Image (cartoon, rainbow, N blue to C red; front, side, top):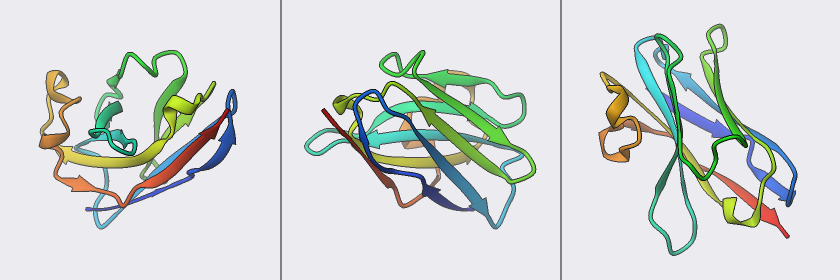
Length: 125
């Protein structure tokens, strides 16, 4: 599976962005797709994930209520709608996918097999 992340950019605090993660080579049908982010000097952290089969979702506490992960079955794409952005959300955002992920491990980046190239999100104050 090849993943293409897009939609990043520069936005002012309080603004919104929508990231996209498109798959090629295979459908997401049996996959879990996650979003992770990495800020300069920090470790990569979990943001959100969605299990394609039943749309089960998981969010990091820091983004709950502000970010929404969703999927488009026709376009084979996962979205991350990000609202009320703050400078603390500035990071490179990566999408990742893998099969056979159970709910309790959706936040663990080590178990995701496929990764996109990342898209930069910069939030100015």
